Length: 129
Image (tube, rainbow, N blue to C red):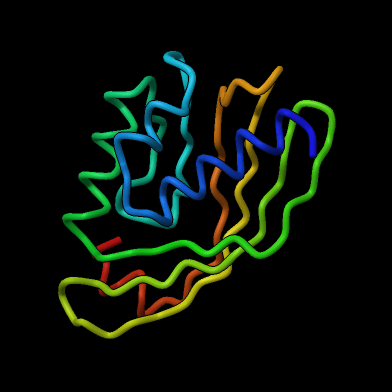
């Protein structure tokens, strides 16, 4: 397994373990996260504090867990396909959404993440999008 793939898998493991601090520390200090326009927490978040802010916005709207199922490695990108199980706070009705995560990574340094998803309209309404 490449150094880049090890770094991405370690980040997901920290997230799965519920260790947000370890997840954030695995990111480069100048990390950039771009979240889908489809969700209320859409936008660009920079650095560790930006990522914390993004997770705070997610937590205001829903409980969410992400389970990666497929990893595709390219030169300086790793694409991860998986499912997000989201429970909006407004309804409590769980929904599962397929998400595509595109990581920018160089020499094992997690530099960026772009998230794409196709959520059903009722879920987006419940999230307040």
